[in-house]
Image (cartoon, rainbow, N blue to C red; front, side, top):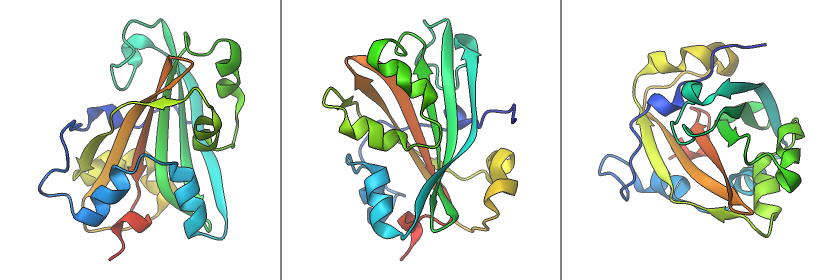
Length: 184
């Protein structure tokens, strides 16, 4: 079992519309409000989810700082695969106050796609999308051995709060070097 959570919260997250250094094609992926799972499934023959780790952390150990008023947060880290290649690293922070009633199942979804669950829930609302650029290759060290992908360009990430029955959770997605977002 892994112990080090990937430090996505350390990125400089931007609330503004597309930054000047963000190519139009990449921006179209980052600001797409539809299901990323569904989009990826349409691009590959085989889509799968591989769990990196799922653990409970205290709010002071929260990666984003969004849930600092919570006692505990469930953090789930997964890789989204297209045709056996990791294309997205996703990290979800779910406050324990969200894991009640219908949302309790979120702690037990295993290798199911969280996106599929979110976008099928009629109560789901999505907050604003924030984006970030990862230029420091050393930040990928915790997952580099798992992805085995070389690259010579910045990587992009996005995150947004989702609400199920008005209960929040944060989903952050880092587009890995093999993701279609970077194809010409």
